[in-house]
Image (cartoon, rainbow, N blue to C red; front, top):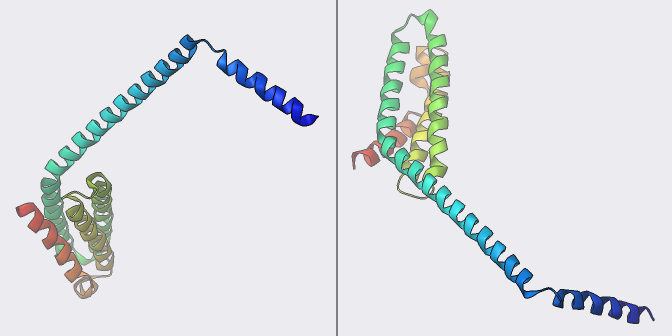
Length: 167
C-alpha cells in the first residue's frame, strides 16, 4: 500500500512539472543565459585588470630591483661607517627594510605566475631574505658581519636577477 501512495505522489509531482507553461521555462533559460553572460563578462574584466597589473609590475621590476639593490649597498656602507655604538641600531633598521623588500618581491611571484619574471622575482625575494639575516648578524659587530655565512647565496641570487635585467 505505501508503494502505491509513493507512486501517486511521484506522478502528481511530475505532472506539475510538465504543466509549466513553455514561457516560464524559456524565461528561466533566458535568465540563466543572462547571468552566465554577466559572469563571463566580469571574469574577462578581472583577467584584463590582472594582465594590466602584471604588465606594469613587469615594466617596473628591473628598475625597482636596481633601486632596492642600490639602497642595500648604501645602507650597508652607511652602517659600517657609523660609530660602533650606533651600528647595532643601524643594522636593525637595515634588517627591517630588507624584510619589507623581501615581502615586496615575494608578493610579485604569484602575480608573475610561471612567466619569465617569476624566477627573477623569486631570486630577488631570496636575496632580501638573506640580506635580512645578514643584517641581523651584523648587529653583533664588524667581525660577526664579516664572518657571516650566506654571501655566496646572496651573490648567486643577485647575479641571477642582474643577468635577467640586463637582457
